[in-house]
Length: 107
Image 1: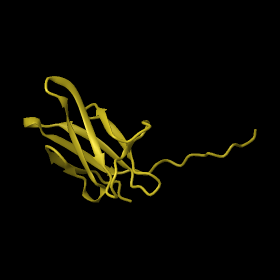
Image 2: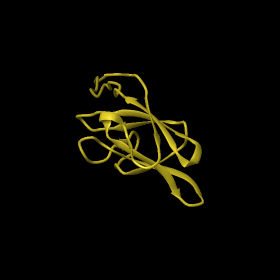
Image 3: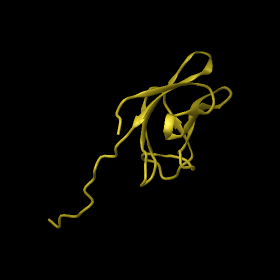
Image 4: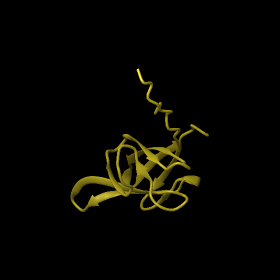
């Protein structure tokens, strides 16, 4: 797994290497709200960590988000920035979900 950040820039659907693609955009004309939809390389949509259903999510610029790719992965960490002329910059890297202890100790 590589922890190196990669970057793509542009408008519309942006390819995230072998990790699928993402479409950051304005919610609507004159509305100060931004959303993204991220497609998984195996088909379907990524799920944002902390959300219950995959789909389109609101975001804040320069905040980090984790995209969960299901049990087979991959998971991604992304950060979306505003660029000139309505373009977006997306930094991304593979994200390893921290191990969680799911066993009850009984204590």
